[in-house]
Length: 133
Image 1: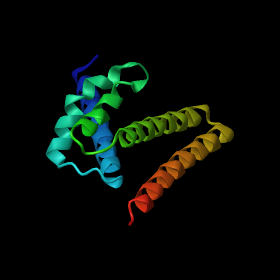
Image 2: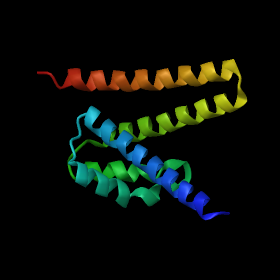
Image 3: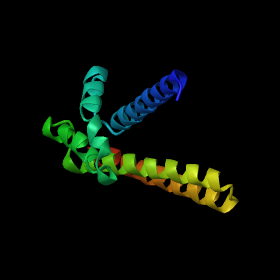
């Protein structure tokens, strides 16, 4: 293994972690949990080792920190985790569909992705309409 492959792998992993933080931070802001960028990065990076638990259950604790600081409710934290896991499943399904080079599997992955985004938007609409007085 050359030094260049280690450098490329490091750059790729840092980019992947950065994209995951951007997705998580965007999702928090989209559903009304406002964190300062620095606070969000520290929380995300501090709980990064929890990503290596079976089925990503450890990531749920990242969102429960938000509940402890009174930034969201328990159900909000559970919703963040479910949407985050759902988007990972969609990404995995799309990668598998592209590897299989099968139009049916690609269509199934796209429909699954649309359903996850549709259910997330319904939860967002429901939350926004319930807070109107």
